[in-house]
Length: 79
Image (tube, rainbow, N blue to C red; front, side, top):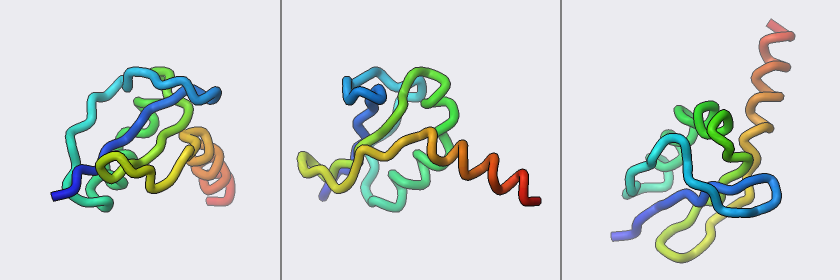
């Protein structure tokens, strides 16, 4: 069974320890749901971007954690 994991990085691409310790995920959806719930705590703890891996294969990234914040602020401004 594949293991889905996140790599946590600074904006410069240096790996950092996450503020919230993730589990190992069995599906991409579970991994993405987890990041959706914890991105703000991760960002506040020093993570600027993440990469998603299936076992040792990078699926996508880097994905900025700051983008969601900007989108959320825009959505609140429109509401």
